Amino acid sequence: MERTNVRRVVVSGALGAVSAVMAITPLGYLPWFGGASLTIMHIPVIVAAVLEGPVAGTVVGLVFGVTSLLKAATAPVGPLDPLFANPLVSILPRLLIGLAAWAAYKLFRGKMTPLAAGFAGAVGSIVNTVLVLLALGLTASEQLSGAFGVEAGALPAILASLALSNGLVEAAAAAVFTSSVVSAWKGIEGARGRSRLAGEKG
Amino acid sequence: MRGLEFWKHVSIGRYVESDSPVHRLAPATKYLWLAVVVIAASASRSAIVVGASFAAPLAFARLARVRASFLLRGFTPVLPFLTIAAAFQVLFSWPGDASRVLVSLGPVSLSSREAVAVALMALRFAAIMTAIGLFTSVTSEGDTARGVEDFFKPLERIGFPARAFALTIAVAFRFIPIVAGEFESVVKAQAARGADFGSGTRNPLRKAKAYLPLVVPVTVRALERAEALAEAMEARCYGVGEATRYAETAGGAADVFAKVSALAFAAGAIAAGAMASGAMAAGAASIR
Image (cartoon, rainbow over all chains, first blue to last red):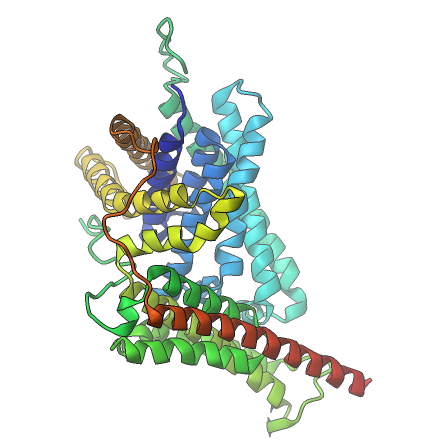
């Protein structure tokens, strides 16, 4: 199927909407051990980057970032939400998810789509975790040390442990979800093995 | 079963149809003010600038007849968090804090620098919240997308696709209720087949797994709808010729005035910020 500009624009909008809905409803969080939750809101961003390229990924990332900024500023729920009412934390890191995921996907040069998509998902997710935590650490170290109840000096260690514990599981979840969505959309059936019709493009 | 109507209790943006000088401003002007205020409030180190960026949206709110209490409604859930942060500011003193001590109670003391830090943090948040809340209550959805196009129009000369960008935003707005509806129907369909989201099982791995057959169909259906929409638009020759607009957002004298004052505000903020950091550097030098 030929990718025209209109198609790219509309698909970015639709995936932006998926991301926005996840960001403002509880659907964007997977329940996980010990009351912690994993975010899956960035998955539409990665899917957009994989399917439509880096520009679409950046635009969907922008929509996602703006929505989380809006949510943090108008309807904060958690103790960390207020810190996201800062474009440096909520928007800037999200712009780079798509770029990183697209680059990771391109490494496979169009082969092994499910694996490549999964890898892109993991890379995009790690970029999200690391950059958001980095931005939080840089812009709001005082507030964060208050929220966690530690002195400012111990903050890098706490952020790093967060990145490892939550970030790695999130990366794994993102890999599974992205791979599933992209495979389903491209009509590649992994386990059940649907044969492709002659002339049908993947 | 609880929690199936995801969309009912969520609202983002609460546009209220009304007629005021602020409502009548061109969307691009509103964006300019929003950008200036949010950036000033989040990035500036100067207390005066942060205070001014809190006062500016409040003044606009008065002009737009939007109550300040309505804009600051979301502030209550943040208060406990602010209290904790303030308590920690007081408990742990800053290394090398040479400012005047305001209150002292045994080993715990509140220096003026700590007090300023806490107040600034609260003020920053309140400023951003009022600015965004006000923007969403005086700008309709259509204007939000049109404003993006107008705002980025100057960049079109260097090849920035302002029109396409605005269309993406408009499509996203249009798709949000559709996607929310899809989520709802898929959750209901899965629940009817005995799927369980959240409550029953204790195993988080299984809970997480339950989301896969939810997210995948919703995303794929959104993609299908997008393809259909794109096809329909192409069949109607969208993107071939110059696109026109049905509603022109005219910019009057008030608009020009608002734009100029936004730029003046930005310039003032930068100047005040530079002065504040200059003063800080001078203070640091004098301590040494």
